[in-house]
Length: 167
Ligand code: PNS
Image 1 (cartoon, rainbow, N blue to C red):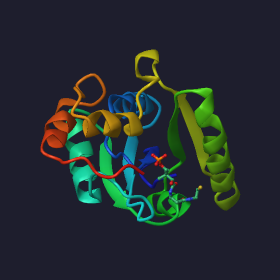
Image 2: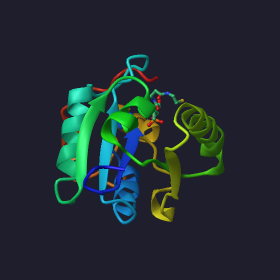
Image 3: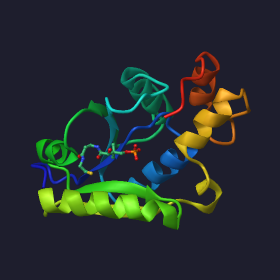
Image 4: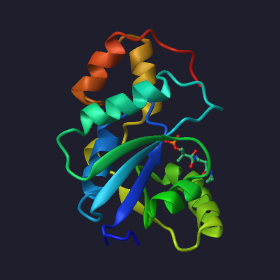
């Protein structure tokens, strides 16, 4: 628990890029926790379309209307970040059954490493259930309209960005 008794959760991810689905999960997590840190994984093993600085800047732009949100780039084990920040939970969005296997394994590993830290799964709203950053990158690659999938700031940023090789 934080010294000021504010309950902090981490919302970790690659956010390449931040989507309407991520925003939906963040807004709902803010109803459960006093503060949510969007923890942007550097993910050196993945080729990302956006640099970690660009990803963080976009999350900041897309969440500037929300209270209780912070954004941080992070490399390492999430449980270490959670300990450093005195976070009480990790929040992950679940879209479909196909997400479950990966999420379950990750939650299990994190629980072994830090038993006091809870992983909280929030079900993505129906209208966002099919949105993924992978789909967004694919639509972007072929010059499609992204406005149904990502916040306006991300649409603008991606217009200026040439597509990256898929990963
Ligand atoms: O949005 P993503 O790409 O599904 O997010 C994956 C992420 C960043 C949450 C995951 O790769 C992660 O937790 N990375 C940090 C390393 C770590 O803590 N690994 C142990 C849990 S498997």
